[in-house]
Length: 88
Image 1 (cartoon, one colour):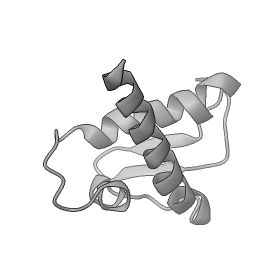
Image 2 (cartoon, helix red, strand yellow; image 1 turned 30 degrees about the horizontal axis):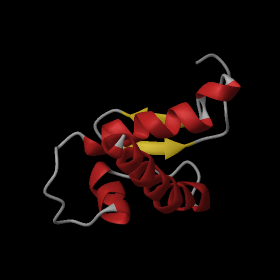
Image 3 (spheres, helix red, strand yellow; image 1 turned 60 degrees about the vertical axis):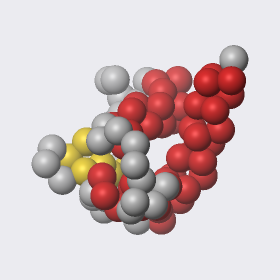
Image 4 (cartoon, one colour; image 1 turned 90 degrees about the vertical axis):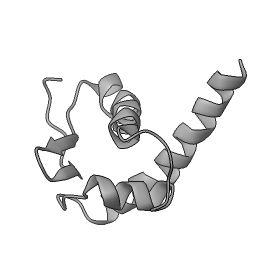
């Protein structure tokens, strides 16, 4: 129960710190390092894949319920928010 509560808390922090950056600059590609720094800080000691994990959580919140693909991976560069397209 404690781990689940902690995950929800971190998920809210990711949403509140990451989404505004993506929304303010639609179509701009944000690197994993930029997103990591925006949500945690550059000295984050956790797993290397934390950004991928939380991008997955964001997709479940903002894309999956609506059957769209607005949070895109730009291979080798990072992530961007684009106008929603159907077909997830």
